[in-house]
Each structure stands twice: as structure tokens, then as C-alpha cells.
Length: 587
Image 1 (cartoon, rainbow, N blue to C red):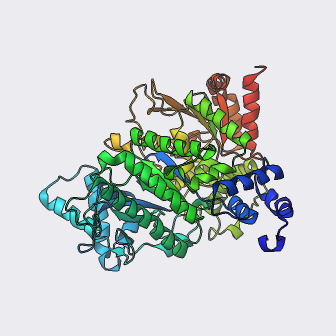
Image 2 (image 1 turned 30 degrees about the horizontal axis):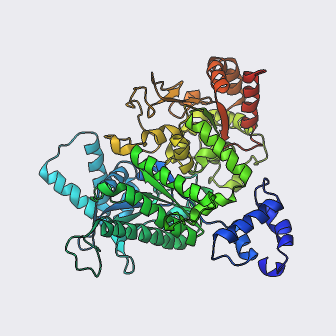
Image 3 (image 1 turned 90 degrees about the vertical axis):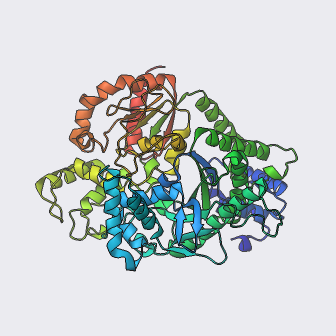
């Protein structure tokens, strides 16, 4: 299209670009953005180049507070000490990831250990589960056995990248073959791709230098080299083996902890490491348009510092002042897509959020970023359990049928006969089982929302991703977090009246909690509470709704409402808007 348009940029903007950009952008706004890009980016010499950059903006570097092992991404960096000779990885994050597979995904662990270690793999998984229940002690022989189990994972090393390695037997074909919402027949539940990265300074400290003791800058440079190699190796493997990003994302999503600040002896350099990582990742996502990165901070202090760095970058990008080398960050140029009006709205939302005046209404779009289905797709997945082979072409109901009618029909079907595997269960239990089995880890969006200083969240979703996102916050300051995705006990969450505690109403209330989430339509932890059929909605209107109406109304009268994850054609959205209007009255 650029070649055909020639010099007629105005026609290209009007006919091609305007329809695919946000409707809030008019042609004059686009022209203004083109001029701004040419002004700010010396590498852009023509309007056509500026227009291409505008239509295909670079990726972004996000920051969240959580656990790098518990985010729904395509790949994550697992820092540790690598031994090519022993074919082993040592580190806290790797050990936790490995033990989680032992407990929850033993079949995958068996595959990762390779074809010659099939018998010992399942035994390792059983041994680990028995230890997790406290049925065995911590003898020296057991510890030696435990270390040998960790070393039994064959790793793939790279000639060009000496600071990273990956599992040699990763089941790409199995993960790619299976449907996003369906468990593999072999029981290999999909997890993010692991890339182990070196954090010690000895492997590459001050190459070509005669210094006996590496400097702080040498240490930071080595860690940033690990970050760079992680991104390049991840993209190389993903592009070859997984052509499409997970969960219908536009770009691959890569997660990284703040490397070296745990067991890498760089704890005193945390601030410098965060700033250096932001710079390095910014350049990497700018040169690779198919990737976003997320820095996962394990404590509040690191998270606050990382957000402060991003804010300073954003301020510089918006200013007309001469910027220094620290502030020339390419991926944050995605902020330039905001028109002045958009920036004003963002600033207003930020002010409301900082004052604790935002109230979040969460729709099905929030957990979809973690691979969970929409309400309609969830019902169709339940129907697939009753078809001969579970294929979409065997369904009796089309996608244009009212979801409530589909739910009523499935309710009768579930009660009348078993599924193709001979299992009998009502529709509520099937929905709960389906979501628990496939819930995986919370999405990036869920972590971003959990990081906002909001006091209240209202959701119609059944899953427990919001609870897990809160449980994983400030993980470095907690002794333990439940590992099983979607099925964990949050009863030990502190009941202190602080910002980290979460009260789940009406299922797990916490007295004096700093925040609360209201689950209007039930939760997978209590399948009987799920609202899905017409009769459920009628009972809800007569009973539970009245009990919760006062809480919702008080929240609406004192907060600014933000709807996240709803479509404008979503019947649940219109139902909520109607309830909001009734609750607000004439105020």
C-alpha cells in the first residue's frame, strides 16, 4: 500500500490507515502524530516511514508485582547458576518451578527429562508430592536425591548465547496441537516456556579486562547480557516452534524477574539493575515488533522504583526539552499514539486511582488473556463433552444462539445423561471443573489491575485469578504461596487491615481487609453458587442480588467506575449498566 500510494499520503491516511486506528483519531490527529514522530525520531526521514511506525508501533515494557513463575506468558526467564558440564541449573526460582511441576504436572516433567528417564520421572513427582505433604524428612540421602533430580533435566545450550539454556525436550508439537481450551490427552498442561539464564559474574566478567575483581558495572553488564540473550533465544524458539502467541495476543509476551538481585549477589544494585533492564528491554522490543516484555518485581520497593523509572521516561517523551541518553527509550514511544485528549483522560484516571477513587468492574475479557474462554465459548466447551469426538463441527448449537438459552439446554442435557466418558455432573460442577483444570496463571492484565490502588473490584467471572494475583504480590516478603494454579487455599492471607489483604465477598470475607472483591455470579470454589441458567438468574434477582445491592450501591456512590474486559454487545455489560443506573438514581 505504501508503494502504490507514492507521495499521496493523504489518500493513504484516509482510505487505509484511518479505518484501522482507534475511532477517536481523526486524519488531522494522524497528521500531527506523523509530524511528531519525524521530529522525535531521527531515523524517520519520510512521512511513509512515520506512517508505517504509527500503524505498527513497537512493543511495550510492562511492570507488575508478582511471581515470574505465576504469570500467563509465552516464555519466562529463570535466573540461576548454569553448569554446562553437569547439565544443571541451580537457583530459587528454578527449584520452585521444578517442584511445582512435580506436584501438578508430573507428565510434563517426565517428557522434559527425556526418553531415557521415563521411570524415574514419575517417581520423582511422587516423591516430591509426599515431601510437600510432610510425610518424609530432610535426611542427607534425600537431599542428595533431590539435587540429583534437579540435575536430571537435559538442557539445550547455544554456541552463540553462552549465558542461557533451554529444556532440550520441550513438547512444542503437543502444546501446539492441542486446542487452547482443551487439556492434552496425555495430560501435558501448557506452561510458559522456560529459559534459564546465568546470573553469576564469573562466567563473563569483564571480558578482555585484566581486573581481578569485577566492578559493579561489570556485574550489571553481565546481567543485562543475560537479559538480551533471553529475549533473542525466546523469540528464536517461539517463532520457529510456536507461530502464534498464546491466548490470542497480538505479540509474544516474555516475563523477566529483576535478575541477580536475589541469589545473584546484586541485591545492593537493585535500582541500577532495574533502570538498565528497562533500557535494554526498550531497545529490544523496539527492534522486534512481535514482542512485549514484562518485568516482574517480587517486592513493593522494587515495583515502586520500576514504575518511577517508567514515569520519568514518559514525562521526558512528552516534553519538548533536549533528552539525554537515559530517556531515549523506543518502546515507550507507544505512548505517542495517545492524542492530547487521551493523555488528559489518562492523567485524570491516574489521579483518581492514586486517591483510591476507582472501582473496577471486571468482565470475561480479563481472564481471556490467560487463555480462559468467554462465557459463550465456555458453554460450547461444555457441549463438546457430550459430542462423539469433542470437535466443533459436531456441535448442535451455533454461535449466534442466545447464551442463556444454550445454558438452559445444557443444564437439561447434563442432568439427563452422562458425557462421552461416562461422567455424570450438573452444568455448574462441569463449569467449575473446566475452569479449575485450565485456569493456569493470571493474565498480565489481572496483575496490572491488582497493582492499582483500588479498594474494590466487582466481577461476574467464576475463576479465582484475582485471588491468585493478590496472593503472588510481594512474594519475596512471604514465606510460601500456594503453587497449584486455580486450586489453592487463600485462607492464610493476613487479616490485618493493610493494602495487601483481600476480602472475597461473600465467600471468603476478611475482617479489616484493605481491599475487597465482590463475586456477583459465583465462584469455582463453590460450584453451587454459580449463576448460569435462566432459573439461576431469577433466583439471583430475588435473593442474592438484594443482599448485595446495598454494598454495590455504596461503592457506586463513592467511586469512579471503570469497566474492564466487557464488549459493548455483552448482555452482562448492559445488565450491569442498568443496575448501576438504578443504584445511582437521580444522583
